[in-house]
Image 1 (cartoon, one colour):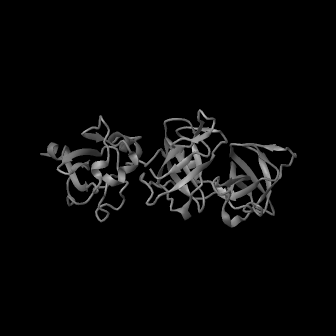
Image 2 (cartoon, rainbow, N blue to C red; image 1 turned 120 degrees about the vertical axis):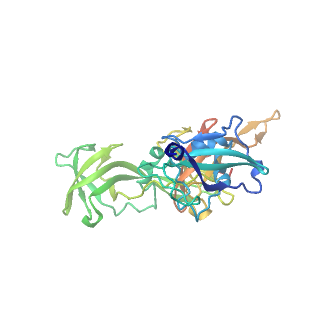
Image 3 (cartoon, rainbow, N blue to C red; image 1 turned 90 degrees about the horizontal axis):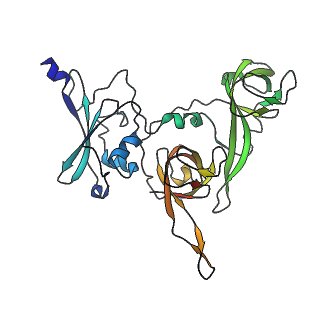
Length: 340
């Protein structure tokens, strides 16, 4: 009896009904009937196993929010089952549990097991702890790097630097920054903000009118005149990939690291933000705009060609940052992004 209980799979009532247009959602050609979640999986990766368009995940996982407090709590060991119904296919989540004491309508939590993330968390977590976009003069009054006791010009990890203007009530964890280039909307020329170039993490060793600060980890050399900001406490949020609620049309306006060609895993800045209806978790398709010369030597605008997908993970008022999830061809700055 014990063996049968341990091996029992309890279908916990998480039935995910497809919307009216669910029949239009294309399954993969080699879609499995069931899949067991393993460590290292992501929502995006699992959705890609079942769907040709992974961002349509929420449309087939219409969770009952009264029964499940967190719709993203999918754990290693969970079983995802693909079922055929008179109205098409649907997915159902099953959970193996050792002892059944709960109502069949309540999801059992798994202690000591980490839920899988929506996308690879390590790819974006460093960027969530940095103010990537600032207003023009945001750093003008920030604490200022004065230099070192031996007057070295270039500073790196392990160095002690002296800084004016540090506030003790903001804690001892700070970051070095330098004002970067303006982020401009290529369609109307509007300045959307300014990049804040992250340089290093810092720890205050001694607060004073001129404070002593140690450089913990640097990614670029630090110079006299650079500025410091408190390290934000932003953590990774597990947003399920989904299409925006409205039509979004924008451009890629910058790529982190300054390269010209962009591929899977790159971080890009977009010309749309919260004011345009963009939200963390949104997936946008990337389209290349290209031209050619006709036989009559006239410039002809070719139809836009889809080249990839990006996942929005951090949204500011006028700008957003996204991780490139798919790249069928090299992506470039000024390529278009829009609701898929």
